[in-house]
Length: 260
Image 1 (tube, rainbow, N blue to C red):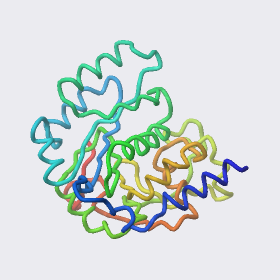
Image 2 (tube, one colour; image 1 turned 30 degrees about the vertical axis):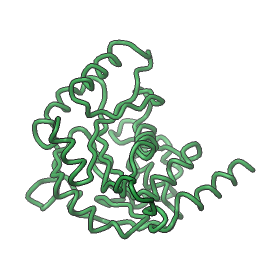
Image 3 (cartoon, one colour; image 1 turned 120 degrees about the horizontal axis):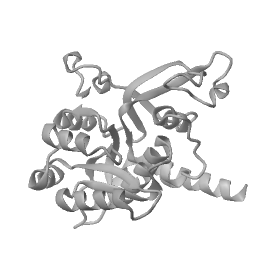
Image 4 (cartoon, rainbow, N blue to C red; image 1 turned 90 degrees about the vertical axis):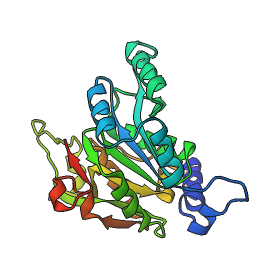
């Protein structure tokens, strides 16, 4: 109980701090980034990664230019194999030596559930980069990165922002369902999800990423990462921003993304 109270006290002090404290820094320190975009990928997904590099993700010096001029970091996010050091790990290391565009989660095993990986991304990205927002993206999404930057810039003054294509709806309680939730009974008699951002793409502000990092050991993971992340913010003073342009159904709807 004492440890739990200590973690909650730390969350109050570090996870929900005024924006001016987050931005305070001495002369000579790097300017705060706008966003870190993590594209969650996996072993055997090289084709998807190459398609993204060709379609919308800058490479080489252009990727560095995006970081320096627009303050946007983009990385493919992947964990380690359960058989540490096997061919799967070696393939990723070799690919990263050529492309230098991975964030490798050394403490995450790829066979674990997606919500755990998403949590690990926020924790590791926060440790590596000081940014206004941390953005999770699936590796089957095409994204207009300039439009994403423009949208995020309008929400910089909201230190506890949770941005995405917000949704809710019925919980899938049958094991044969594609989106089956084994703990469906926790969602009440009506079996309905709370409001949460769709999993294709969503963003959290630095304060929320700090909250996740501080409380990573006690945040519950459900079957899917979109529901899991939404559950972590229930009861907190969080600004849910329903951004229609994050709904990746089609480009024609004005969305900044599209599913491949």
